[in-house]
Image (tube, rainbow over all chains, first blue to last red; front, side, top):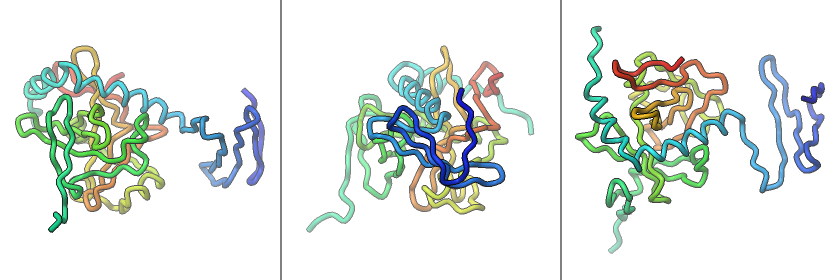
Length: 81
Length: 155
């Protein structure tokens, strides 16, 4: 992993075509600006994980999962208050 | 004479023919992660299948998600949403779940059961129909799975 220190306005170049600029630095967060060609997807890492989950989620309605799910939801014991 | 709100329809492979008018649509400005082009979603409730809510894409009949209210999975659920996502749907700081905002947990298959990631709820502003999947970078809720005794946090 390359570790560098940058100030606001300074940039990092990745692969010759992706440019990352430090836009703002606050106490707990850094705002980054990313310029990349249209064919290069730029996403927050956690979004990529959720994208995979969403693609998997489509399988639920297509399979037999929903029918089983409804039955299971009806069987959930009611928790005492 | 033209209808002020023409009826729209989609033939869902799983739900059959669905008809709605534009006022009933939900609009996701950025789509959903992995489905960025699916901006228009139609919420479908089948009374016998409550609390399930289907989110059917109005643009792609093959895209249909199964969801349920997040508090029904975890009663202690509280909305964690970034400033960017809050602005995308026009949500007030003091928005109340159920009155101003609906939070849905997207369900995905897990073996013979289902699980859901409560750090990525579908957030819908009930006042303007705008939605976003609010993904928390460092979540506090995490994965929940439907087991024999109900919903449980996955370790």
